[in-house]
Amino acid sequence: MEVGTRRLRLQDIPDTKQDSIELFLETWVARGSHLITDAHASYNGVEWLGYSREAYSHSTGHFGMSNHIECIWSAMKRHLRKLLAAFQLVT
Image (cartoon, rainbow, N blue to C red; front, top):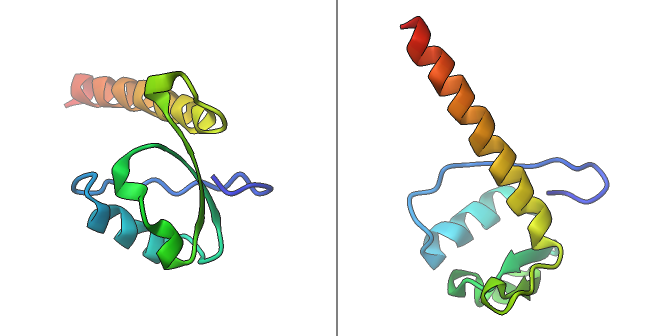
């Protein structure tokens, strides 16, 4: 989520491999941006691409600012479930 504007880019990516995540970042996120992520290993090395990173380890109970995006995902999933259920009732 972009700080200040609160803009958000959601995209389905094929997997959580480093190449897939880096392609998404290079396509949609300006170099020099500060990333707030979980501790997933696929984010390792994004500094080489021109990003700074702040990582939080969920397994140790540290969520920090990444908890905000987790709430957004939860809300999106609820919304999509309702939308898909309504669509199935109509068809």
